[in-house]
Length: 105
Image 1 (spheres, rainbow, N blue to C red):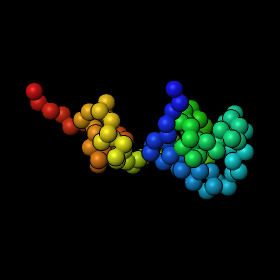
Image 2 (cartoon, rainbow, N blue to C red; image 1 turned 90 degrees about the vertical axis):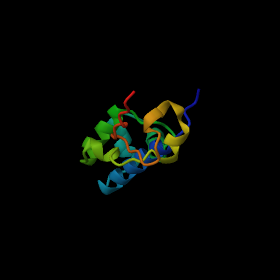
Image 3 (spheres, one colour; image 1 turned 60 degrees about the vertical axis):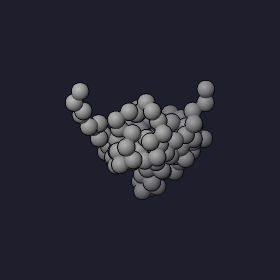
Image 4 (tube, one colour; image 1 turned 120 degrees about the vertical axis):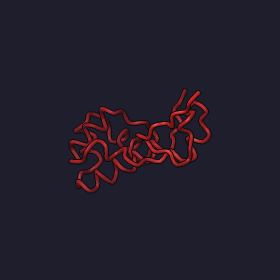
């Protein structure tokens, strides 16, 4: 089954691109440094392919950014509302790292 890119994939990809450009590193160079093709790097940056945590960590080091910068304040938004598996965190104002509210039974 092919992965359908979601908002989070696109946002992380956008941040990867911003960090790369800010670090003044060409796409093919970044790809070579982490061991992927430049085509794969492009797919990460546009959100077509989901990037692994290992690749994000390697790129963060190359781009001299904290790993958390790629994830902080990524809003789940509409995506969270339609996914029944998210349960209590399926609120529109939920962010990665937020904890679901505790409910008493």
